[in-house]
Length: 315
Image (tube, rainbow, N blue to C red; front, side, top):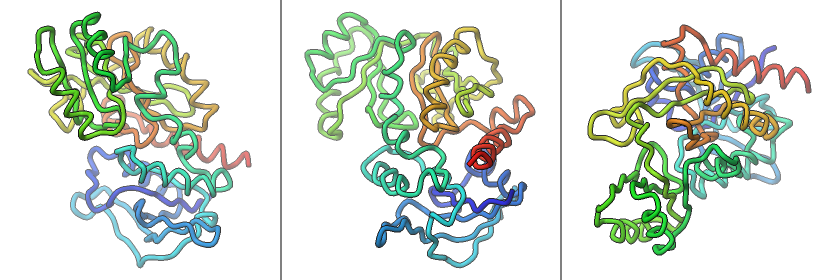
């Protein structure tokens, strides 16, 4: 099976080939004989009922500083592609949402990974609220009195933007911290959306587990341990990736959410677990493949492409 694969992502020139999940997905697709095309979200157009991308054919290689070659820009009709990988980074803003509306025109005749309708309906910090008993105490609100009451109950809290990503705008307020009102004012000035407020989980000091699920099944995990004096475990702010296995509780969480992920066409998902609680379900552009590959001596991208090919073979 030779497929035409369009990859909607941020500039390929800036890819970190040692850590980027999209890069190894592209490399695996190429190794299987699939043709690759690259375009950015701003290169996507609706034209007379067709979804058009100004894309370049590309080839990729694991050579630092020389990791890709690209041909001339072509105007391609995405219905002529077999697969579109929607892999641009958040923020999950109106631009992102618009891209899902456009790609909805071609899916599922052209398989979009992940399903654009489900991506649109499953923002990381909101999708998780649909599962009972696995979310830490959580408030989503702009109402200062509600936030104060939540803090009075739980004392130690985390405040973060509802549609933030990469650890940006995450604040830990300990009991007695007098910055709550000023922080809420700042959030409402910069964001139109509500804030998400959660009980602080001290287990984060032991790590924030990233678990990869493929078609609803867990396939690997890493633990991301924050550096001293930092509440965020994201790698780009100093978090350290550590080899990890799934606990009994984490398997239970995956069993709880897995069927919904599969049903909604969310093929490649990364979830975040702290202690016994699920904190996020990442469906937009999940990461972690290369780190898990190195620790576990596996190729998770191979399983993702097996799943994609199986779905296309069944059409």
